[in-house]
Length: 316
Image (tube, rainbow, N blue to C red; front, top):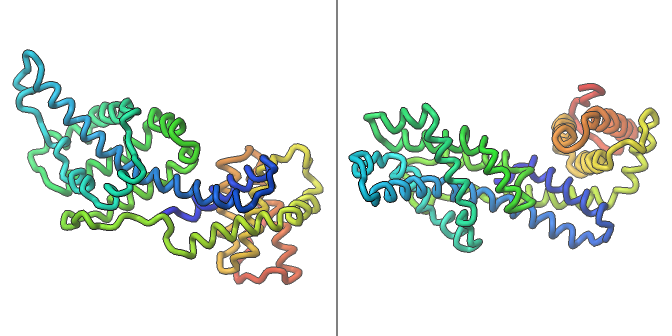
């Protein structure tokens, strides 16, 4: 399922775009937010399909070598262990994956350089060489090799990330988290599971869907007030040089603080400081932490919010 970290990122990006475009159509932006989340969920399936395509490409290479005018003994008697990987055979038959691929018409056909590159990188690893040479062949070893391919080869493939950026503007910022979803799915698979084994849903629960919508709506509704609070508490900062994205991040964080009293303050602070690190300027984490701390301290002192949680404090 899409983690709340991704949901916060998607809300931040949508809020930022909302104010940069200036069309003031909240309903349209909310639809865009949900669409961007669904597109990230599509990547979950695209990556699993890519794993299947890497095995398919390996099989195509074997068939091509067999069809040579003068094939070698190795060409005629190839090692089929990877091409016939039991886990990939099992994954290929998953009904939820098959349905999503068919419904969304997912394909890597126009980007076959990616599975080709991944296979070449995989074949160069000692893990792959040991797997192919191992006299013991079983489902567990097959699954471990595929997990290794995703975790250590695919997730480090620069060509894959460049292609993902070209394929969809919604993918590149959350690809790392979607890889995590795929690996969690693979980790839970067992040899006994049939084609009906459920994949991860888009949202963990209705609560997560409600979370991101409420977060977005509150941040938009309270934008003017939050920006004034930021200005009032940034006396020692040159506001003209503060990144606009920082004010978006702080505003979203304040919306979370007010709208979701059950979320500990430390969790909220840590999440939005990480967003500042990943998406804004070098100085942004310090600014976000400092201003957010001042404003929330004021909320607590006035009774505007009540949370049984330790305040992070400046510099933490």
